[in-house]
Image 1 (cartoon, helix red, strand yellow):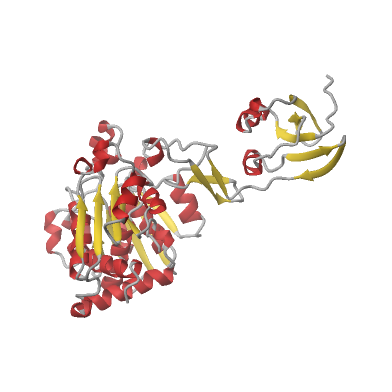
Image 2 (cartoon, each protein chain N blue to C red):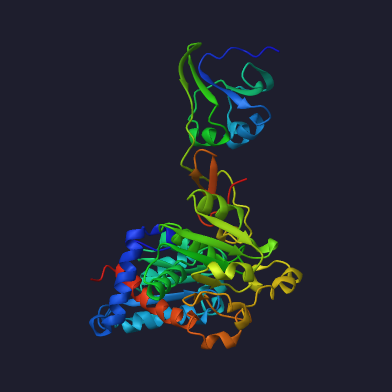
Amino acid sequence: MLIGTIVDGIVIDHIPAGRGMELYRYLELDKLDCEVALIKNAASCKRGKKDILKINEVIDLNFDLLGYIDPHITVNIIRNGERVEKRHPDLPDEIRGVIRCKNPRCITSCEQELEHIFKLTDREHRVYRCAYCDTRAK
Amino acid sequence: MRSLLDIADLTVEEIDELIAKAQDIIENPDKYAEKCRRRKLATLFYEPSTRTRLSFESAMLELGGSVIGFSEAQSSSASKGESVADTARVVSCFADIIAMRHPMEGAPRVAAMNASIPVINAGDGGHNHPTQTLTDLLTIKREKGRLDHMTVGCCGDLKFGRTVHSLLGAMSRYEGVDFVLISPEELRVPEHVRTDILNAGHVKYRETESLLEAMPELDVLYMTRVQRERFISEADYVRLKDTYILTPDKLDTAKADLSILHPLPRVNEISVAIDRDPRACYFRQVLNGKYIRMALIMKLLEVE
């Protein structure tokens, strides 16, 4: 399968296989006018399979979100056809407006305009809890 | 400006300081009679709670302050659809401190994020009730003379019982406190309490279904009510509500200096015959609630 070479843009690599489309939606890549390619189930030496996103434009990325999806994701910034930067997102301390609290007793379930906020409470086990009701994110 | 939403917001030193202040209030009430003069407490109670609301109100009145507020959502702007955030902003214009009870978990945090005055969580659904925990700690301190090196039994609804979760969190920070968790299988402590409090804090605990078997080793017995409002299924409530009832005969093997606590209201889980037993502390516990709330209000209002 051939996908054109990026001149100026971003390659998000090592996305866990099957989660590329989820990331595509979270990052709202459908709103971009430039070329965007999602490669599913690409061969990976470390994990067997992985997803890759190629964006033919340098955009501002939500690194907190990438870190939440998987801190093993790598972000490669391409300028003039060369990789000029490779970044690993950190596990964010807080995530806002990305995941929703599923607890029917949480105040966010009845006050719809409240921003859904999750805090990292256990870095080792990557546990996030709702900032309002402490329910664990699934 | 600081709020109290979760007992974990307080350090052990701050809890000890509040307990010491409450004990001083008990011994020297006249010294504190005017400490909050011209200050107003707003009690925003979105669900009924006679005891907690009256405790907060009497605490503020005994400090020389005054009280405004509502005791049910129907008599507030919530019935017109006003958000908690807006109510908190509005009440900040009228009062100096808020005590909020709300059936939805996290509502007091929303209030604290939007109010310009301190907010005290007076109970948010099955989530947190930090002033009940402070009450429990003051009671144990006054009854036992210490908060460390003891065996605490928690009995009844340990799944939905927020007072138990907070007490486990608070007491586990003191040295040498062991827990015996006494409940039916269906009402055991939830996973997050087990992982975040008990396992994370390397707390020594064991679980049993038998109150009788646990009784001889207990220094403190914390009884809880199986609350109808925490159950989604009425059938589950009816099946489990009478599971653990404390009667005088069950105390035959108890220590002579056992302290029996209960956050109240009691339904039938403690026989009224036990009220005469000097080991029953639950009505003294109610009084302690007023004193610790006085100490807390002073702390949050930064009154010396």
